[in-house]
Amino acid sequence: MDMRDKVFLGSAALLAFGAIAGGYLLGDGLKRAKVADRSVTVRGLAEKDVTADLATWSISYSATGFDLPTVRSEIDANTRELRAYFTGLGFKPEDLTPTGAGVNQWLNNGVNTITITQRMLLRTTDIARAQRAVAQQFDLVRRGVTLQEGSGMRYSFTKLNDIKPQMVAAATKDARAAAEQFAKDSGADVGGIKSATQGYFSIDARDGEGGEGGSDTPYKKVRVVTTVDFYLR
Image: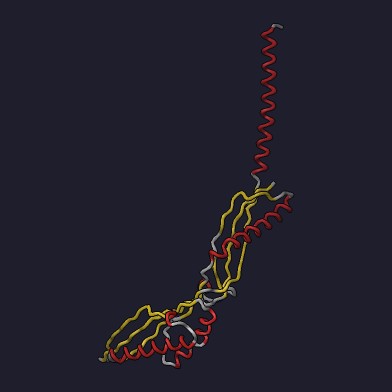
């Protein structure tokens, strides 16, 4: 065998070895990639009971008569009684502000009838005092002020941003607990977070009542659901 044949055989052997080694490394790399790609998607829930920090009461009342000065005088008297009612409960004058008025005239059997409607807004952060105002509102009837339909107190929670971080953390912790249970059942371990999606925050009545979003009650429940994809190893 001459030198050229030996060189050729040596090169072929090296190529064969390289192909085998390359195939092994590629296969091992694919295996590692497959393991790294294993994941589980779970949801985590966090809930927190809160109390409203803002109360707003949209108040509408009206007076009806046959001449404008008389009706206007009656609506002014109602406004004074309304302010006296809230002042007696300890509200500040600036807590109650007018938001508009309307005048309606029509003929009734040839008689001109006039109705003036006045709208006021109570806005306060004193939730306990607001609740007392609602509970005692029949006193307004005794004062001659009849509230129109649609007048009602609305309670709002405005400090959501203050509790968002800890609620998201709690929901993520809850999601990890669910992932760990899944991993335990499948003989795996939970790794880091592959991806995560924060759900929307909802605020409802704590006890399931209270109108849309629990607006009629100061006692609310904040809820958030997160979707987290954990690596499994």
